[in-house]
Amino acid sequence: MYLKDITLFNSLSKKNLEEIEKISSKEDFKAGNIIFYEGDKPIFLHILLEGVVKLYKTDSKGRQIYIHQFTPVSLIGELANFENILFPATAEAITKCKILKIEYSKFDNNFLRNPNVSFEIIKSLSKKTKILSNIIHQEMILSTDAKIAKLIVEHLELFKQLKNGQIASLVNITPETLSRILTKFKKKRYIESTNSHNLAILDKKSLESLYR
Image 1 (cartoon, one colour):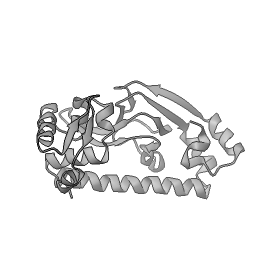
Image 2: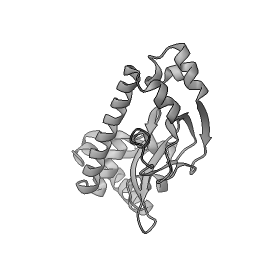
Image 3: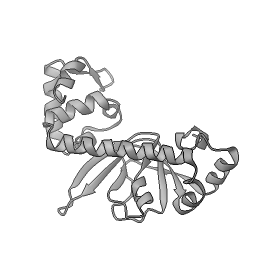
Image 4: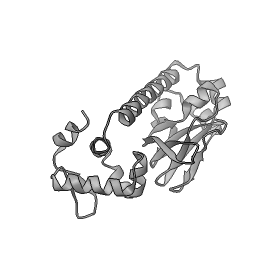
């Protein structure tokens, strides 16, 4: 993927893109690799180009508290850069990923005054506000069945890419609970397993009724 294909940069001139390229690098991560830890200093601006990344916090007992998963193309943890604070959560690759890392101090000095870039960043931060609202709604209001139904409807592709244990961690439940709920949904004919062992939605309306 070229810089000009990233929405954040597609209004910039060729010269600007070349300048960003000089302060950027692409890094590949394997599934399970940590991109940054909670508490790290945000030296780079991270943009997910390929793969799936999950963001989580760790409680006092060492348990992961899932926050959100990101798919391309997404800024990850950018609020820490803009507010000059330590990363408030850990980012982990849950599939093979490619990350664009931009030296933030140089990016800040040379490009954040560009109104088009600023507008795209504002849109990204707005999305993060919606994510936070969704997390509060999901953790405080939705039942476990509703959480899984919502994940199936909105992110069915994750069931093709991830193992059940990984998917269960995304909604803070055990793999056994996930398996039980999926079996229930199959019996009710909400979903089915395909020949390639992926999920297919049979009754979207019934799944949506669980969380709306």
